[in-house]
Length: 78
Image 1: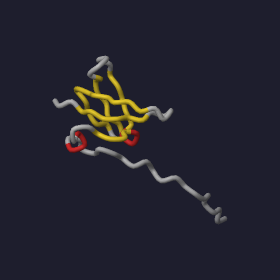
Image 2 (image 1 turned 180 degrees about the vertical axis):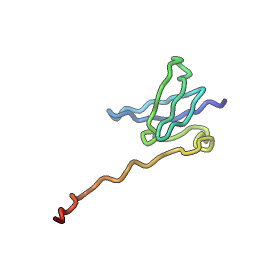
Image 3 (image 1 turned 135 degrees about the vertical axis):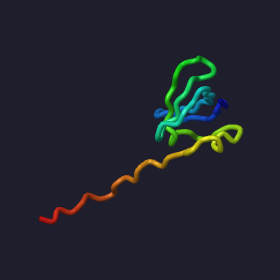
Image 4 (image 1 turned 60 degrees about the vertical axis):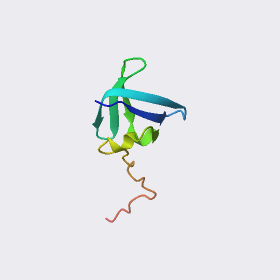
């Protein structure tokens, strides 16, 4: 299987380059074994800033948009 490389921004806003082997897509997540430390990792696709070497073309769904946020409360009609 190919190695997928990407730049990821975590919840704290820090960016880092990652490379995964034995990866798979699970809904809105990308999971696999990190090439550098050989640990299993899970990444949210919507936090991936960019893919390296055209890796987005080997994924089924490179990015899943987050659900829309409600801007208003529903009216109570009773």
